[in-house]
Image (cartoon, rainbow over all chains, first blue to last red; front, side):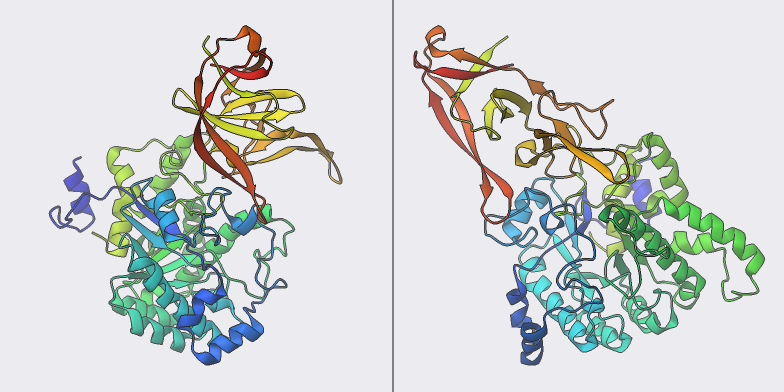
Length: 372
Length: 157
């Protein structure tokens, strides 16, 4: 199979790319140097709020996660820039350690802290999202055209989220709509649908990087004790989010909606599809709105970022799992500058054809995010 | 085997480390007590610079509720994914059967028995960045001239 055939199989004519893409990194975490970075993008009312009350999430440790992370700032120990800010806060250093070093054609930004959608104060959360969106544009995507941002939205108030999508959709700097994944209700619920309607209307995928805090444990089994637990149970939670989208009929209502699942794992995808298919055959009376087998919705509407690569003892098993998920649905990511980052030169040890490698390393992401 | 003097014995404090480049290879030297150990500055997992890791020990436990930190100061923890390596021989703790960090012998030789030089070694200063506990390193060329009255650390490749 030639490269041209693969490209055409993705609905893109072989001549439409102006250059040959090689590597797209679907998960890069930029960081504020400090809260002061947000000040120029907040109204005086919300600046005062931030100064007085700070970020307040549904978690006992303000300004921190529930679990102590493996390293300071969750980062590679060599990712602290000379300019003095935290890892991911210095564009020149990020170019040097990531974009230039690995010759990344495009990097997809994912801001996971502060999480506007997790703020107690709904309207402050919206203001944080707006400010972060403007900050991403001015500090990252405008000075560095290889970087693309997500439109962060206050998804717990869909009317506010839609307003923000309408404000920014159409700017080439933003290539998806970003929401947290641990929310008041699972994301398939009807209260979130106006967001999906807007995203579908503007042709923007919904990006779901595992993130956010709600009032519940990260698992349905109760509160785990360790960060070691958390790093895996976020994948279970992501599977529950995916199941919710399917079960609630989101894709029957919005058939062109696309979801990018980021850092939420993927070896669970075959399990979830098979198990849902089995139950759907028996329980169709309960969910008559589902027009198709659940696994078909999973395949047609979800894309998955690779990091952390879920390595089985024999890498060839992962190739089988990719086959079951679909080679057209896997997208490479590093998670820079976080401590468990995947190096593009070493992370994908599974056997792949040249075509499959190119799909995973750039074509699938180019297609999903509309990058050429 | 070719050998490369790179420092006098008092240049690395106990628990300290030094990064040098020899024949294009970055090599990190650790001092543990009065012994010196050299390791390729490259994690065999995904290639991170081992010199920027923290030094620790092996935390072992035979049963829940009991644990001991063994061999403190003899383990380098990779700055990326936290892979642990035995400084003394490069043995991996995470995957001991198939992963080994490349290590090299370091010997101490008296200057009186050595060729005078000068030998050029690229030295790196490795320092803890104040307030963060994070390690930082910088490179500088440094000629070494052998003096008869001193003892030298010699890397054997």
